[in-house]
Amino acid sequence: MNTLPKAERLRIGVFGTANAGKSTFVNTLTRQQISIVSDVKGTTTDPVEKAVELPSIGACVIIDTAGYGDNGGHLSNMREERTERALSSTDIAIVIVSGSKEDNDFVKRLKRMKKKALYVVNAYNDVEKAKELLTKNALEYSVIDAANYKDVVSLFPKIASLIPEDFNASAIISHLVREGDVVMLVMPQDKEAPKKRLILPESSTIRELIDRRCITVAVNVDSVKDALKLVTPSLVVVDSQVMKTVSDIIPKDVRLTSFSALFARYKGDIDEFVKGAKAMDMLSENSHILIAEACSHSPLEEDIGTVKIPKLLRKRYGEGIDIDFASGVDFPKDIESYDLIIHCGACMFNRRFVLSRQERAKDAGVPMTNYGIAIAYLSGILDKIVY
Image (spheres, one colour):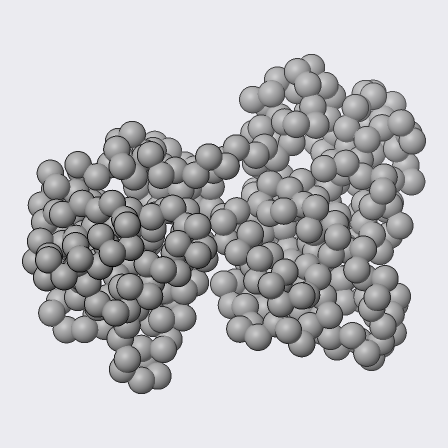
């Protein structure tokens, strides 16, 4: 059984206008009744996700979206927003084209975004109208019956050919180590950490180190000094909250990084995150900051995003600094008013989604950084860590 987390799987989004056959396509592809199929427009509201294994494609998540072009008031606007959100995290878009003006607008948008896409004409729609639109846009397409499994399976090789070259190309930590290296992981467990389990960044890092055949030593911050008497690590990885503490303990010639810094590179554009941290020099007590957390949870008194980072910011720039918070997939539409965005390590998001947020921030002229990079900068050790 493949236990690859959803955030690590290829994400394939199915898009199209209302009643184009998206849900039928998804149900046929997965051979399960994942989505409700109905002639009533707007049957699918929130995107429906299903983790599957597909021949020649591998582990992926299929997303049945609410669609676009439904001008039905407030509810339709909400459906469009959720479709937009699904598009942001999509690695490959499958577009069921029916030939409408909305299709034409969406096709042009995908081309502007340089999004990998497969265009499909459902035999139950107006085939000639759809083919005319796609031909006008110089796009290849396939005509299928969305309810026919053989027709849908015939698309698998084409989907596989669209897998982005950079998908899973980056590593969490392998680029920093060699076989046989001793790597010390300093992993304090705060009150929000799951009992008897490691958080995802820690477990994923350990998995990669095992595959790289490194000698991995896991300790709590209180055990670092004792562990250093037993082993000489070539690299120390810490929870970003104790980065400065551990930096003062380990020998100067031992390389240091944090789980959050590693995930900043793994999930997004690390150079932009570092640039965003350095923009913190421009902050003042009058600055407006957004702190974005991928996880949706009830924060406790030790929470890094809602408690510890704000405390560091107010200590450095003044108590009057204005801080907003966003969690889960919620993210403000208008971000131009912010002077800085600080994002979590995004272990629950896929790389495409994080890059789309970074792109939005860049387009809005707002610096964006990451928890670990920001803390390293505020602690004065950003130039000492590796990533």
